[in-house]
Amino acid sequence: MNALLAQESWLRLAAFASVFLIMALWESTRPRRARTRSKAYRWANNLGIIVVDTLLTRALFPTAAVGVALLAERAGWGLFNVFALPPLAAVLLSVVLLDFAIWLQHRAFHVVPVLWRLHRMHHADVDIDVTTGLRFHPLEIVLSMLIKIAVVVAFGVPAVAVLIFEVLLNATSMFNHSNVRLPTSIDAALRWILVTPDMHRVHHSWHERETNSNFGFNLSVWDRLFSTYIAQPRDGHEQMTIGLHEFRAVGDQRLDRMLLQPFLAGPDAR
Image (cartoon, rainbow, N blue to C red):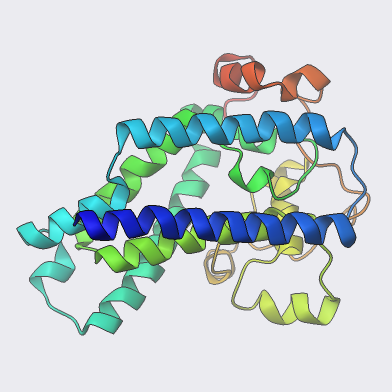
């Protein structure tokens, strides 16, 4: 268990650093949209949130979901530990299952008022780039981890599937939030399977109907199946307004204000 947990930490760190660097360089050389605010100011505060999230999750969940999966496997908990599947099938099915669970969670965070209060900090970013994909309120991160652990225990998700999914989720969140320009033909082909930056950017529009669309992070199929897919923003990618009407002041993007945002005035659902 300790060996796998050690590998999990290093693999996640290496994947994070590699994808972050690639997307940051890509954004700087081929941006999709012009920035509306200071990059240095936004990045300082967004990266501050990431540090807080990382420290909190490591303190509260030292073994993360991978450790829980190993424990469930040893104890025989969960569906996949009761009804044995071929290892490869169990891993693939588990990754798809976890992706659907995150899609459901994301949609719930837009509909349930108390959950939206946690999630809206993510949407209050007035620009969108690689750091937006990691900008989540610490309380949302904790709740998301608890939901993920519940799914892992209930279904007996293999530890390797949890590791694969968490690396993928982290990487694709940075990719599909990034301010990069993909050729139209490549974007159109990719989004039949994966969530692309142009597809997810619609979700960060300040128009409510568009905010309540394109909830996926990895697979695009869920939004198509549940009729929450919008192909393009009505104002166009270059002209669309990113963020929320209520939190547009420069001070709203400051670290302390972001941490307090669930307790500030604003709509309770979106």
